[in-house]
Amino acid sequence: MISPDLKLARVFVSVVGSEAEKKETLRGFEAAAGFFRARLSRRFDIRQMPELNFELDESIEGGERVLDLIDRVSVDTPETG
Image (cartoon, rainbow, N blue to C red; front, side, top):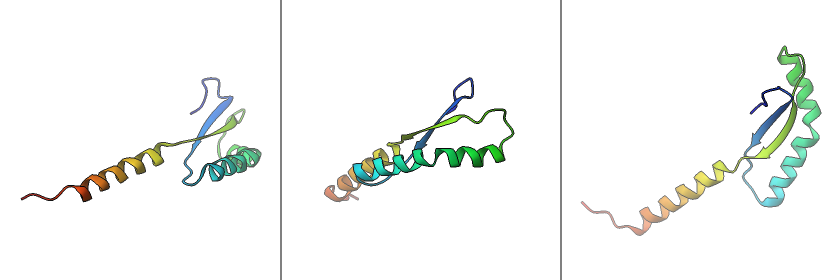
């Protein structure tokens, strides 16, 4: 998601793992933000490359929880027919 003035880009990152692993991964992305901006500036012809802010995207884990619940219901419910 990029701000209307193109100065800030929110980058959503999905990390499957413990809370410590998620924090460590975000720190790694934040440390590499300058590298990413430099690489992106070579690919895109824009006046100013936006600052990159990395945020966790929890949607994959939410989907995994839903699938797990569906699996549990399927195992606990006898088939009819």
